[in-house]
Image 1 (tube, helix red, strand yellow):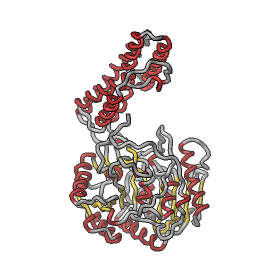
Image 2 (cartoon, rainbow, N blue to C red; image 1 turned 180 degrees about the vertical axis):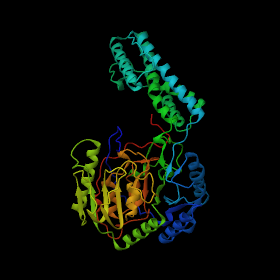
Image 3 (cartoon, helix red, strand yellow; image 1 turned 90 degrees about the vertical axis):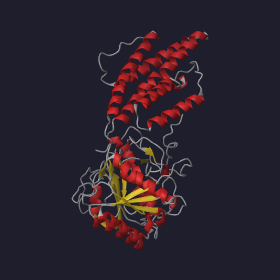
Image 4 (cartoon, rainbow, N blue to C red; image 1 turned 120 degrees about the horizontal axis):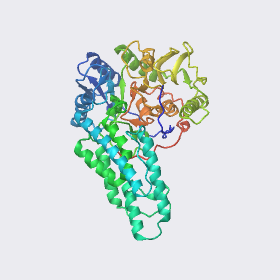
Length: 531
């Protein structure tokens, strides 16, 4: 079942900009040098789309759909970056990976040094928990520490933080103007909470710490620099000292979870090769989670690093990839015509993230019905479209049948089909796979998208945003995707011809009807934490 993280799902779309769509000379093609099919498909695609001959990059890489983090850096990212710089291809905005290029970057293995650091952090937790209890005792409010290891560290930390804030609040009301008492209160506060202003914790009327703003900002920047690099013992000791001085014992305890995540690679360190390559020219950033996609903001921030749009031409076999290319070009020439099928699980009434996602699907259906001449079929019972129910399918978006494709569709050439579920692009090259991404392509779709591992619901482009842009004919497939994709260095992959623009010749939707919504959160460059 697809998981919904604790943050809210935000539906948004920037307005369709006036920039010209992606052109062939702004695209490079990446193939696996030791895979004859990969090179043949690359040349077939380049000829079909008039891509300059010098825009083909091929390099040796492992067979199969997985690659280790070390091999990704050594065999793909490093050589590609060097080649782009050597060839002065500064105009390149997009990359298409050809079948044969690995799909998924695996989490790195934990080193001996990292295991030592994990032990150090666990010891640090115990020491700092004891220190927090000692603080409460020194302030006249002792709390007996639990026997042995705490069953729930986060619950214990929340309880300690709450007790400390209550004691600080009570003492602040009793301080008066006696200088020594106020000095002692501020000293205790700094030990517990660092630079944090008491008023932000709800302690109105408490003494105000005399904080060096420049020093605080410098500490914050240095912390951000350290956490995006591989930790060793020297960096760890510096990081712990900075966090303790700037955020106190409670802040240090809160940071231990993040530090352990950095050292215990797992699912959040998995990424699609495509999504990781988007950040090829970024400064250092943490690879254990996702980062915000600056291309989804309008305008793209001036301080954003060079960000590539990356997709792939891939599928169950080479013949499918050729057919995807041919169908897209044919649909552009003749115009994509057919029905639009939207499969929601409810009518979207409600405030849960899943209900809001259903509401976005319903909004997409209403937009197509009211503002285009395309026929739309909307399902809201949760039953899912069944075999044979979707003839002449040009566009499809629905959810949720995990790893169990339902052959409901008769796709017209050039169809774009998206099924939202947890891991529908874990494999693309297994011919009989029941995962939705390879099955949709096998059954005739020209393009799809999906995750290579559990992405969380909010990792998907909002359907109304992605498809409305496609319907205007103002942007290519890859631009529609990246202008609505929330995160990079994450799980998502787009499979299709990046230059495909099915409605360029015959736009189906006026840009005035593209839905507008909430903007993304304030953007900060990678590796920089706002003070």
